[in-house]
Amino acid sequence: MIDVGIVGGTGYTGMELLRLVSRHPQLRLAEITSRGESGTRVDELFPALEGEVDLAFTEPDVGRLSRCDAVFFATPNGIAMGMAPALLEAGCRVIDLGADFRLRDPALWQEWYGMEHACPGLLEEAAYGLPEAHREAVLSARLVANPGCYPTAVGLGLLPLVTSDRLKSGPVIADCKTGVSGAGRAAKVATLFCEADESLKAYGASGHRHLPEIEQTLRTLRGEPVETVFVPHLVPMIRGMQATLHVAARGSAEEIRALYQERYAAEPFVEVVPAGAHPETRWVRGTNGCRIGVHQPPGVADQVVVLAVIDNLTKGAAGQAVQNLNVMFGLEEGAGLREVATLP
Image 1: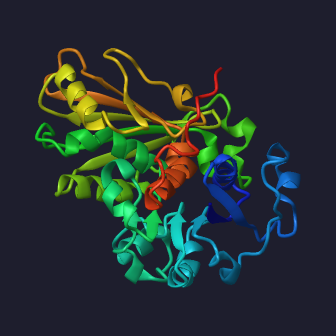
Image 2: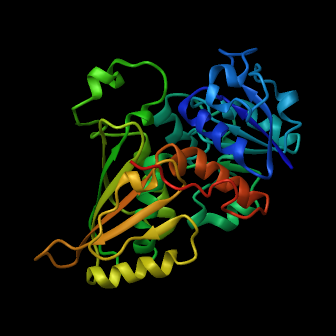
């Protein structure tokens, strides 16, 4: 068994990690931390885990955590970078679900996250944990930067195109929508039920923290910058995310769909839907899956619309983190992740 720790187990991402780790056949939850809930049993706070997790939350302690084989950080930005160096030194592998190690440039990180990076020397070492693009790097990594939810949906939606000769010059338009759980569990007026229900709003249109991560992801895949316009939206549902990507590309929808099918044929969690189908977020609810559709606007040459849907808490966060751990430890990649979407 692989002993794992979770730092920050009371937010939505931490809760999703608890659910997945507790059911994983080859993982043992050894440490679960929360400063605010230290001393509280996990199943007291989350009764659904009664009989699944027999632990209480503790204060984060590097000494105890370093006895784990791997540690997940499901914490606010700035926490993981303060503890990761000591854990790595102790031989523990680290998977950060926050943003501390996603951007390679420490100056860019400080610009977008408003704090100086505590260990900039680790930024180049960290493997960017989008397995479909960087599986070999994840396999040999001791530190993985789990991608953000929007960069995951956009990255998977564009990967086959940006690594081909079919992508034409011009901006990629990423029109993305997410459920309210993406804003986290902390109470905020904008995400209260009465504020978010029966409404749809854009935010971060003039600049969002995930934009430099998306640009870095596409630049790494392409080998050159990919001009990107990214506009996120909040929709009145709990979980789920759709990226609608408008892209200038050579070829018909059928040709580009074939490109996607070939690229993702061996990927366990990405499925290209049939011609004419429009993937829905409920098709992947609670799963680590990504469904992708390819369409072409009528009467518009060399333009495609790619639709990519994921669950923002699973493939966009906790599920992808477990997928990365599976890759890092040489486990079957789908171990603990073979969930079927819940319907309705």
